[in-house]
Structure formats: C-alpha cells, structure tokens
Image 1 (cartoon, helix red, strand yellow):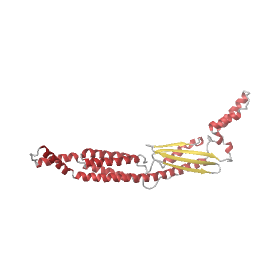
Image 2 (cartoon, one colour):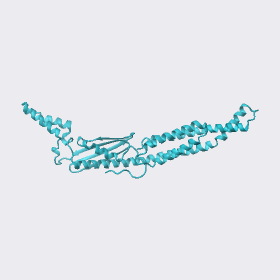
Image 3 (cartoon, helix red, strand yellow):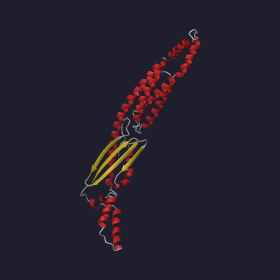
Image 4 (tube, rainbow, N blue to C red):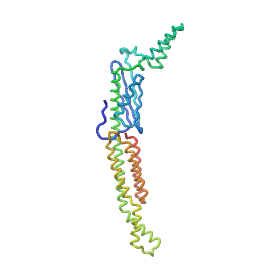
Length: 303
C-alpha cells in the first residue's frame, strides 16, 4: 500500500513516472502523468480486462495526491508461449462463434466464411489476447502494486518540483517584504513632508499671509490621517508571515490557501498605493505587485 509523503514542503501538480512489471505470463507498463487542475481528477486508460479494477486503481492514486488531473495508462502484453495464452478468449467471443456455426447448420448455409467472421471479432473486440476476459487475483494484485509504485514515483517528482517552486516563491516573497519595509520608512516622514508641502502652497498663493501654527498643525494632522497606511502595512505583514508559513507545506496541500492569500496581499497593496498619495510609495507598490504576479503564476502549479 502506498505511503503518504513525509516531511514538510509544497508539491507541484505536474509530473511523470513510468513503471514496468513482468512475470512468465504477462508484461505490464504503467505510465502516470499529472497537470494542473482545480480539483483531483484521475483518468484510467487500460485494457478492458482491467475495467473491474478501475475503482481500486483510482483509490491507490488518491492516497498520495490531492489536486491535479492525473492520467494513468496501462499496457498489457501476454508473453508468447504462456500457458493458456492461446485459449484466453472472452465468453462473448466464444458465444458469437457458436451462434454463427449454429445459424449455418440451422439454415443450411455454408460455413466457408467462419474464418473471416472470427478475424473480424478479433479486430473489433481484441479477444485474441483475452482483453475482455477477467484477470486472475494474482494479476490484479500485480497491477495494483505497479500502480502504487508509479503513484509513489509521481509523488516524489511532484515533491522535487515543489521544492523548486518553494525556493522561487520564497525569493519573491522576500522582495515584497523588503519593499514593505521601505514603504514603512517612506511613510514615517509623511507628516513632515505634508507640512512642508502645505507651507509652500500657502506662500505661493499668499506670501504676505502668515499661517496660524495651530490651524496648520490641524490640517497636517487631518491630511496625515487620510494617507495613513499603518493598518494596511500591519495586515500586509501578517499576510506575508502566514504565506511564508504555508510554504512549509501540509499533507492536504496548500495550493488553494496560497492562492487566497495572494489575493489578500494584492488587496492590501492596492489600498496602500491609493491611500499613500506619494510617488515613491506608488512606485514601490508597482514593484511589489510585479513580484506578486510572479508568485501568483507559480502558485497556480502548487497542489
């Protein structure tokens, strides 16, 4: 039985693995690949003889994977000379041949075309290698074991790619954290700049008028309150901290959580840019949003 991935770390939703098996009777090749998907979807493509095992196969895959579209294909080959291989026909195939022979006898028709009839059955139903016949318990166990090995190999590849994603996202996150700190420094001097700007405007409009210091202080306080982004910076800091913590991974996956938190970070950056009314801050916000967009693209591939 497959074991759940151990240790911290996020996982990618893309990957590929191939596992083969052979014994004196059959050969199996199992390929499994995955791509991005909002939910978990497992597609099983195999010979008809394995149709009854589809639920078990999907259950094995679902033990290790939580998101992504996973396509699993099985190729089965009966070894030449294997005992019973030449007689491993489906019941439907045998019944069709018997009906044909009976019809010829009943209506006095010649059976010269029996060989052609059998050939058509072989081509349309794949019965020559027992494709539609039930498989033995041993073969079913072999199939599930190979599928489990392929699923584990896929999980290992997804974890490896996830480690690369975590590194890339972590670097972008550090850039946003640095930009946030720079915005905080710029906004610390906002009241002083507002006062200087207001005094310059008063001098330009009415040089002969001396501003009332108390009224000027009140106006500066009101303007400072309107452009204050302290709360937004505090929330942004919380979101960034939670995002970095989520990068350590979780058994159930963190892709949806990271996607939501990316939206929250973007919302705070938009508010900061609109409230600050400072060209330097708005430029820093643009830089942060550029880094966030790169993060958003990577998060779309996280399980």
